[in-house]
Amino acid sequence: MTNLAAYTDHVGLWRDQLRAWVPDDIFDAHVHLGPPEAMGKISEARTAEALTTFPSFTYEQCRDFYDGLFSTKRVVGRIAFGFPLREVNIAAANEYLAETARRDPTVHPFILADPHDIPATIDQFRQIEKTGVRFAGVKPYFDLLRIDKPNSVFHCRDIDFAPPELLAFMHDEQLALMQHTSSIGIGDPAVREFVELVATKYRGIKLILAHMGRYTEPRQFDDFFASPQIEHKNVFLEMSSASSASVYRQVLSRRDLWDRLLFGTDVPFGLITGVEHWSDTHGPVFLTRDNYVWSDAKMNAEFAAERRKLSYNTYHVIDALKTAMDELRLCEADERDLKDRIFRRNALTHILGAKG
Ligand SMILES: [Zn+2]
Image 1 (cartoon, helix red, strand yellow):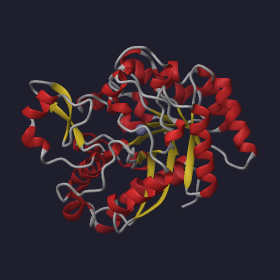
Image 2 (tube, rainbow, N blue to C red):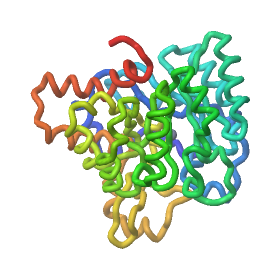
Image 3 (tube, helix red, strand yellow):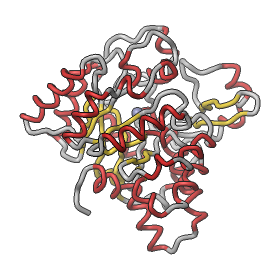
């Protein structure tokens, strides 16, 4: 498959720092699974967008990759959904997840929602439910709006791809919502209005803010942290892609938020070898060790030294959490308990309703 190289511990981050620290049982709350057949042709122009980096990732590829990525650990379950790109066959992508969940009950599927045909999404949910597989949540995504502009996340609102008709259905069915926010993310007041709407009007929904709500610079997270929207107990934060220790420092500073933080990798996208980075000259950039189709060659040359220190994005996410947690200086039992909440229990109990 394109762009998925064999596992490498590029800078020894897993071996030297993370392996001894990460708990033995991991629940991954953000995984994309899909076979190549479910994806249509991606045009040359679209390959310039990072979201097209991986067009597919099968259940087997994911399982095999975990063996390297989290060696000596067990991935005890995951929340999984298809690749929400405009080129995808949504029905086929959802069918693959249903089939996968039938084979492996530790895979908790979320259904991709077609923003242009919510009745079709609800209909597929019902049809698959009759076969004994129930989607635990919904994955809407801005790209499925098919807005004909680059970086179309900046040309839409959350409510456009998670419309009221879908939210009402989800409220009735008590489903979780994996929300990749629009615009700059949670620092945008309009995004926080969406959070307010879901948390108060559709209270049956468990709202998961993917990538810690998204931010282009960490201080935008501060605006959310200071807002009334963080008080809603049905709002959760999923960690993938967010590699700034400062956001975890904030969340961990409030004990009541320890139950609302979820570890997720966003594999295969979490395997992109890089991190968000604030540059005085370039503003918010995404630095990567490897060269991707969408990489900026000039910037890569300029940041050559920083890039050599990089590894898989998910490793840097864990490392940022570790930095923030180490500063808490918890006793061993409390630290073990907190890690178990973030890496396993919160998703299982608060999102999926399992016991213990
Ligand atoms: Zn994702």
